[in-house]
Image 1 (spheres, rainbow, N blue to C red):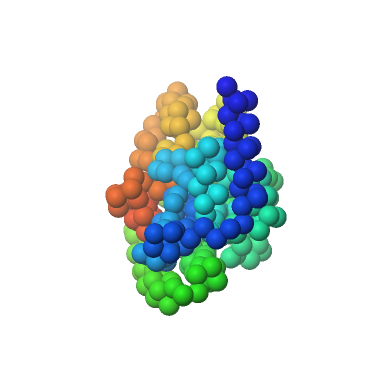
Image 2: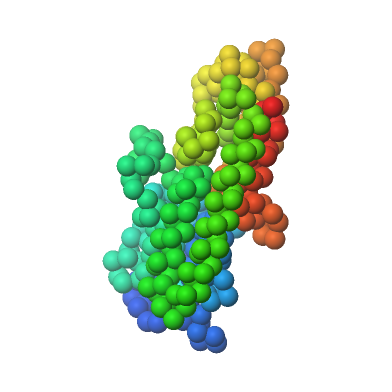
Length: 307
C-alpha cells in the first residue's frame, strides 16, 4: 500500500516539476501562495491580507520535522505561484521537493534566507547544522517579515502598496510584542529562568530573553530521548530546584511524563507547568492560533509556572 502511494505521489511530483505556467486564481486574480508551517501561514496572511490566497500545508499540532507530503499537498504545490517554507531542514521530509522545485523554475522561498547565518545557533545534531526554530526570536521574525514582503512585491507588483502597508502594521505589532514579552519575563527572577521542555525548540528564545533552555530530545523530534537522557535531566532538575517542566503541543507528552516520574522516583517533585506551542500554533480562530498570540501565551505560561 505504501509503495502504491509513493508511486502516485512521485507521478504528481513529475507534474509539479514540469509545470511552469501562471496559476493565479482564475476567479479573482489573487496570487496563490502555499506555506508549510502554521507560523509562516499566519505571517503571509498578515502581510498579504485579502490580496493573496494562502494555503497552509500543516495545521495546529503538526510536527514539521516529521511531516510527509500527501497527494493533496503535491496538488497544492502544483497550483502555487509561490511557496514559502522555513528552511534549515525544518521540514526534513520535504527538503527534496523544494530543492527540485527551485531547479525547475517553480518559486520556492525559504524564509530563513532572510537571516545572517552568523547569527544562527549551530547544531552538530541537525542536518543543516543550524537550529531551525528561528521564529522564537522576534527580531528575526521582523527581518523575515521584511524579506517576505519584498518577495511578495516581486511576485505581485500590482499589490506592492498593499503588502507594504500591511507589513508596516505587522512590524509595529511585533515591536509591541517584544516589549510586552520582556515586561512579563521581568516578573521572574533570573535564577528561576530555567526552561525544560520536550525538545530543543526554544534556544533562540533562551538566548534572546535570558533563559537556560534544556530539551529532553534534540533540536529535531526525529531524535529519541533515551533512558540516560531522562536520568541526566532529572538530576539537573533536582540540582537546580526547577519548579516546573513543560510539554509541547506538537510532541507526544509521554517523554515529559517519564521525566516527571524519574524526578519523583528520587523523592523530589516537579510539576508539569503546561503545554507550550513550539513547532505549530494553536487551533485556528483561537488566540494561540496566531504568532503573536502564541508567543504571549507561551511566555505567560512559562513565567507563571516558574514563579
